[in-house]
Image 1: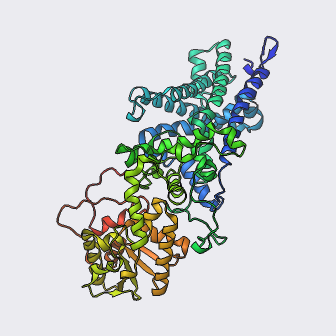
Image 2: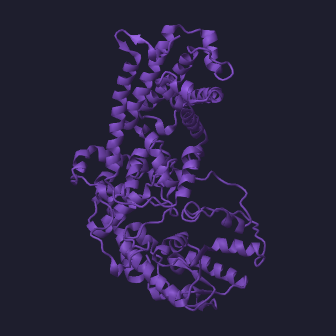
Image 3: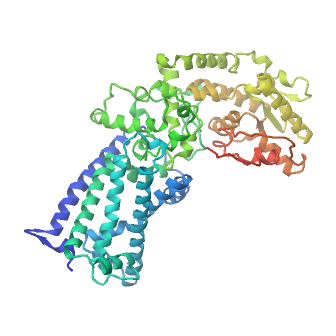
Length: 584
């Protein structure tokens, strides 16, 4: 039979109808993508054009390979079927829109059969994925979807199912459909034997479904089909949870405090956030994985990391005209996020790790804290219970370089009877941190670590009262100025004593000294967690093989396990863990 596109429908040729349909839906789709792109580019500058090799590799594994999506085996597996199915069938949409011109005039004869098979497999697995997704949503509704409207998602699934099923009927209407390369199309042709009217109807229903899909993509969560790729490609390549300094110099290092040239601190307006940070708003799939793993959300606090990302897109759309006129909307982003949400975040980065498309939730909140703490210094009454003790902590850090407000000259008292170098050069400097220096329970950790290091014959020392807080608490609280002051002071001490290797027990000190100090001049200092050192010494035979004769429960600290990427050393150091709970 003649291709449906080449038939005249009354006085109107089929190709004219398709051109009109494509023009209307394509124009709407294009305008909405253009509008979103303009909103994204209103963000501040952000250099994400480095490390091209690593970025391309991450696109291959993260976007194309769907590695994070597959962390949820059921929902992820279903999504992969739909994603890969759509990739495989996408060229057929162009072929159908050109009356098979692509397959008959562009593809060589030897490639046509395999291409048809790939397309048919794509339609099939996409259909299977959609049916499974619809069944899961309607019959086995996950708790996070209960009580919420599923209309949008279900309509999209039905549209994709329509696209896939109608393709088999259109295929069945073609001449010489192959049982080898197009088995389902051949089965439909030989078993159902569709009439010409049915094939024509299937073709136009197919095209109408695609056009409707184009209308829905840019105004729904399915905008991630467009924005997920750039979101993955331009994701933050720095170590997880590493925060940006107040100002970077031409050499890529932090500008010293006495040389800073900044008009404002932190982010409060939409345009203060970087363009890459703003892409997140349109890339979000609303899968709620971030919500599922957020400890603040689980404990009933105001923070919902998924809602924060939705706020970015909704705010931009609500204030489109104002933003495009380069004016500042009356409501700022802090008001949209809500201070109770901003201060509820623990910066554990579980949300960032869980996101299948590399959304960065935490920096939006910590950048907002910077503005609140360093610029505005006025806080909502709702967060007084959080802010009052936090401000006391900040004052203690400023005056005594520890969050407890205890005298700084007592910082090394925990090691008074250990016969250890204090403030002198040594191969290893043990950085006790505030908790191990002042908290009675944590002092035991510090003392035992020193004992183990000495037993292994290491040249070890401590800084004593010359050691200051790493500044982690100040930085996460938004007082970047105080953090940098503490960091510069510690780095000056390290240089004076000639520190080259640091051992830390505190996961936050381990991260801050090892990752974040590198922006300020500590790039030549090797920083290790005490569990890493102990495990290394065991492997070298300088310590006995690990063993324990009792019950041991080990909890992975966020800043060592998830953020630091160290999961094995603590387990190996204690002789292994017999039972592992599900990791979140």
